[in-house]
Length: 108
Image (cartoon, rainbow, N blue to C red; front, top):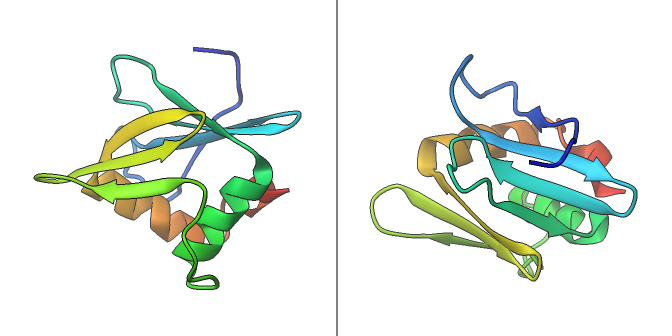
């Protein structure tokens, strides 16, 4: 995994795997710490900001980062820069963090 400074939602239970977000100069990176493949979705700050706006209810149009709910509790985040799979409880913890503004700094 590249050397990024990863941030997870404060709503993620201590010690549990969660969605993590990091930034590099012109990109935002999203991963699931429990994913054994180490998949990292990469997007622009604008695309990540659009996802945040949708999750906060500030925007209704689809975001460039697609969110799909699958069988069971599977949740997939997909963009041109990759796919990350997580679970519904981890997704819910991420969304709570988004709504609390914990990831706003990544949106540019």
